[in-house]
Length: 216
Ligand code: AMP
Image 1: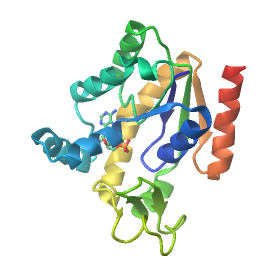
Image 2: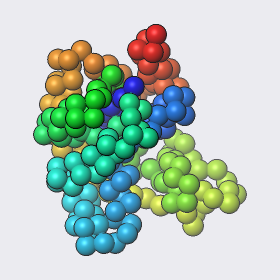
Image 3: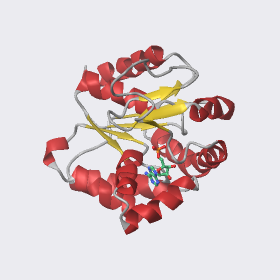
């Protein structure tokens, strides 16, 4: 089973995809995480990517498609992927289709988490990520644990693109480039719309329900 999870920045894609991975033993492909890894390496390409990401724009399709082909062509992940934050525009959706056909696979389910801009701003401005274990917290809604060896002040960091102005730009980019992709999957009948404003467990139960239907 291959799944795509859509949603504007701060919609809870990361949280939900981690839950789906846990329950269904899928392999998560977050293009945002892959790009942040490249940024951390401080390579020439990483520096260019950082500029684009921090401006709230999309990284070139060429870079993204190369990352994705490396994963889809790897038989360890065959028919066992959840895409988080990909595809981000129609061109990427088309090349995903071609790649999946090439490796005899398909998309089985597409989820879209919808969240309005004012909620996104609140979520993003409080978001901190532990650079050691990758756990994500929100200083207002889901604060990090006290006296923790791992998720403490030393390791908790804000993402470079989690500033209010960048968040607004990322939301605009989502509306302009990514929402047309939702229509593409709506036509194929794979799209399930879920409110991202519900409680985390309510959302994951809804997602699990649709996955169970597919699995029979
Ligand atoms: P995310 O972690 O999914 O919110 O992604 C963070 C940033 O990485 C985005 O705002 C984009 O600048 C970049 N990015 C992530 N995925 C893609 C993609 N599929 N295509 C282009 N840029 C991407």
